[in-house]
Image (cartoon, rainbow, N blue to C red; front, side, top):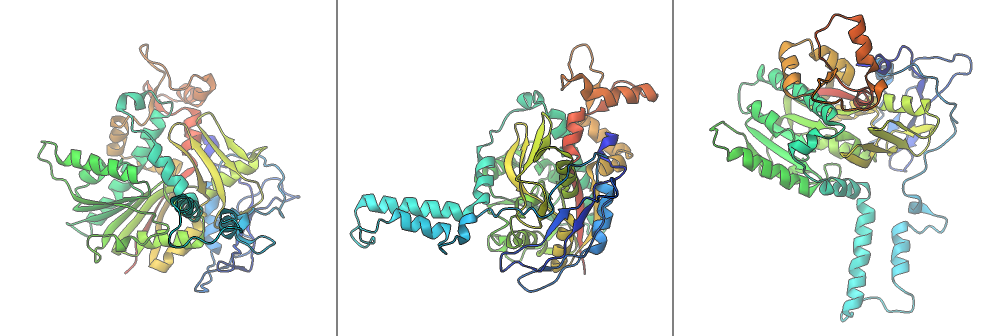
Length: 475
């Protein structure tokens, strides 16, 4: 991977101690803090943060922040930021000067004062107007969740041939390899404790991209859930197609649930309400739930509450420290390249919940996300008796796992790296010459067999914003 991804020294990020109450709508934040005397500093904590939860349970995470310094990236000077800048509320209308909420104002606007309130005998036209108002109010309440569901529902399923022509073909395969290795490793760990009847919850299953991984892992039962109804239906169809193949291979039992895991309790939707899981897999999904404490907690409750002792909560999520480092190093409120872009609303203070940014990955993702501050996630899951046992940046994970010969063979079979230099019958994924300078330099300085397996510089930059994690359910 690019050496630039891993920092020699990182920007200084500190946690401000605030008296914040989730119930009152005030939330703690962690902010970027720059020293006027030392141009280059490392991540450190100025003061422990106390987050007052609805149960008034204080959380302090002093040690975790210091550990995050290893995941910072390039040594790039950052632009000065105002420490007193505040993130504007996503719902400005929730408490305006007149004391009328956005929803109430909508009601007032849609019911003219000179007309009677709708009662029995209301004309069809007024009934339709009432239904329209109801839909508007429903949309306001759903907010970000409906945006996420709509985005993934509208994504078109494309064939292998078209996927192979995508600019991010190798990047997607690489990320898929990362998931495969992570899932395989923790299934193996589980089998050292439990020999049969493994039950898995796939939280945010999408269109079923991990179904084959679970089949190869020979699990017994899988529950797939996602907020996007179209994706769930496609996932279920993919499962049925796998089940109906005439290869006589064993396949797990499965059930499929359309639900917002940040707002709905999944146990109410299970066929068996007493069901417990051995693994909950949450791949590239956590960041949609951190709009508020309640939503994040509900997602974590769904992920962890029904895990059996010794079970695992595993997943992948953006690295908040790397996102902020790149943002502060940028001259604007956004950063990225021709493959991905990340755009924040402003620089400065970053609330623990509801810190929204727009993320775009070419042809795949174009939807708002929320910053997941990992030390906060680590503290929140303790409520469900979970302990962090594994966390690596994608670079660290790759460098560790590629040493295993089976993982290396899997990488080749999945076409997770691009051949460099390209042979005479093909061309490189990127047409930018400097996108492969790192590979050319590596070949020049090392004795390696050609072609070399790599990603373009732009793809390395895109995939290096993520990390992998695993929590274990305690006895």
